[in-house]
Length: 357
Ligand SMILES: [Mn+2]
Image 1 (spheres, rainbow, N blue to C red):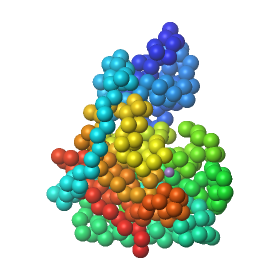
Image 2 (cartoon, rainbow, N blue to C red; image 1 turned 90 degrees about the horizontal axis):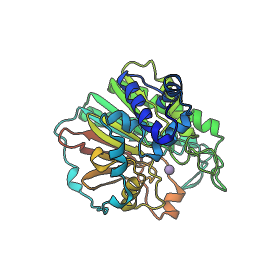
Image 3 (cartoon, rainbow, N blue to C red; image 1 turned 90 degrees about the vertical axis):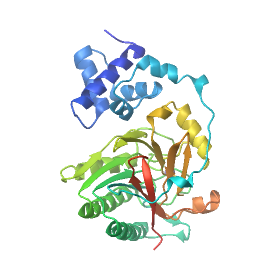
Image 4 (spheres, rainbow, N blue to C red; image 1 turned 30 degrees about the vertical axis):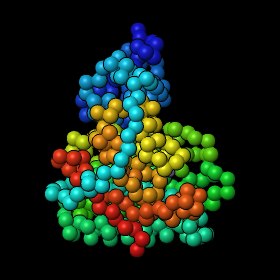
């Protein structure tokens, strides 16, 4: 009977591969934990399964997408000594005019729903402010679509859907239930609107830092995950809509055979692309040759660049933040990215949906 974690990890990986071959959706960690007990008599909770994977540089998404993992090889490959130096450059050339526009990716998030403070001071009706911006987003999307219709849409929800409650001193917000219910309604409404244009929609979501339940960081308890989960249930029976719910803060998702790493983007305290890449490496999450593109939110500022030839995108926001404008001395982008999936490159066109008016 396998009992040490080192012996259990390969078992876990096999089970997850098996489950994804069988086409099961949903909660892989829970199913794996159940299967470990029933078939191998090994007791590991769902949390322990996730923890084991993380410590060994895996995630469920990665295992699902990487059929032929060799545990020992990968652990060797992630040796700390082997970090390559990080290079960083912006390559604006990658933003070309599209040749083919079948499949687009809409990046949304950083709504910070329910914050009573914005760059202009006190906002007594933040959900109304937000709704007005959602209306602008719908209009922009409609304009873009009319110019260049497409058949498939992927939506990346990049976290900070809510502003959270009591996560830092002096934070002024609507009660969390109003944030959660309000933003879930707005996103649901948006998805149904998008569906009227594009009948085939796939949605992925990662949780943000503002979704945490207190000022202390919790990896697994997050309001953004709850909003995403509720949305996945509400959209479950909608024909043409797939919501791939995963509570992991990292997701490696497959879009037309390109592998996109999604993360909220709060893995450093500064807007520094070199640091982001360094940390993605340090976390031993993925090897570079397994990634085709990286997408972050969090920084409220549209950014496009590349490292090791991997394109990287940071999305904008819908929220005029006093923190970004003053504390980070930055100018936020009240705009969302609409990316066109390419055939030769993961992305061969970038459109910016201006949400100002
Ligand atoms: Mn954030």
